[in-house]
Length: 259
Image 1 (cartoon, helix red, strand yellow):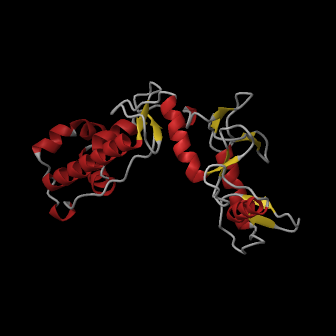
Image 2 (image 1 turned 60 degrees about the vertical axis):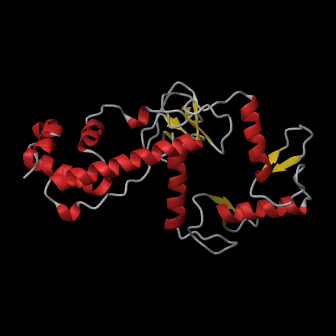
Image 3 (image 1 turned 90 degrees about the vertical axis):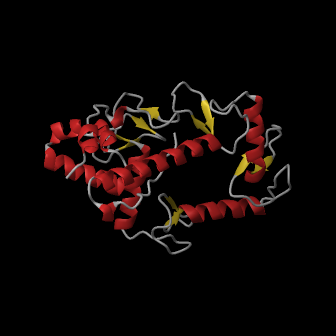
């Protein structure tokens, strides 16, 4: 039998779904995903359309105000493309569609011979096949090395990504040198963590308050771990009270993703 605490805590769910249905949802949510039933009910009753939310600051609306023919999103994280059947299609759906077409057609990379090495395909320079994303990156690094490209700061001739040097003289900067330089510029720009007031971090994230402020990576991970422990503890206690000791093992709850 369910304890009085569970009946009191989740009484709203019992009224909405009925006793048997609510018990099923309660056990499923708390033993598999580690989320409370109250969170489940709150999210399921939300009327916000995910397709109308901007996924990131870089996302762009369609020039004519149209939405993606596949996912109905109003935003695209990259370019907008034309759907074969008419109408626009966002970057994510376009990439997925091209990847699915390549797999269904048995496309393989002319360089490495693999068929699923990347989510994006390019025409091969020979004009007789395709080249995967990984081989394109390797070829770009090879060309940069042959061209004598090197980092202005450390002298390295190899890196996974090149950046323009902030000196503005057309020279290059490797990725390991670019990261501390970016942190230095962020500090000079006055970027401060809203939680701990630090001006240095390996990665800045938007603060969940939604006021345009930032949070350092350390504070983000601290809150993420705290929420995971809280969800796991809540699931363990409530499953025990429900009379299912064999399901009372702490549930591992994953992170909720970046802001």
